[in-house]
Structures are given as structure tokens and as C-alpha cells.
Length: 110
Image 1 (cartoon, rainbow, N blue to C red):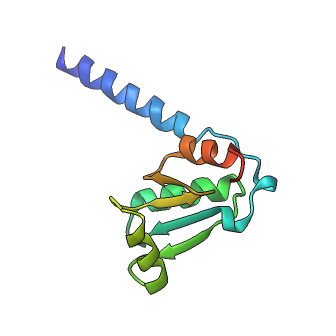
Image 2 (tube, rainbow, N blue to C red):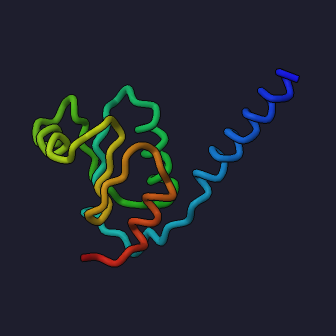
């Protein structure tokens, strides 16, 4: 019974992960200033976020908060809870969240 429960849990997690990167974005409507990524070199979720943005052709500005003083200062102003942290057209997206990134990019500019 435990094996079945563990398998079911892994299946749910795998489905969520698989769907997370199946988001489509109209990259032609995105400017490099629309997305700012605050990250570190060692963060696996930062790597996933970079790969997602690159796979969608989304231009972005990235600041490594451990090596860029301006990026760290701006990151600290955003009430951070970890990395990756993204500013997407004025919205804050915490963590690797393709759906939230796509939703923020689809919203009209203020």
C-alpha cells in the first residue's frame, strides 16, 4: 500500500512539473525591460527559470544578487523570500513559476 501511495504522489508531482513548462508566450510582444530576473549561480530553480525564458524566446535582464551590487540593492527592495525572484511588467513572481510569468506578461502594461 505504501508503494502505491508513493507512486501516486510521484505521479502527481511529475504531472505538475510537466505542465509547468508547457506554457506558451508571445515573445515578440516582450521587451528586455519587461522581465528582470534576480538569481544566483548555484540555484537550480534559477536555472529552470532561465531555461524556461530562453525556450520561450523571452528577453530578460538578469542580476546575480551575489555578484552585482545594483541587482542586490534592487532585490532587497522587493521584500525577497528567496531566488529566483522576477519582476514581470511590474508584477513580482517568486520562485520558478512559468504560469505566473506567462500571466504577468499577458497582462496589459500599466
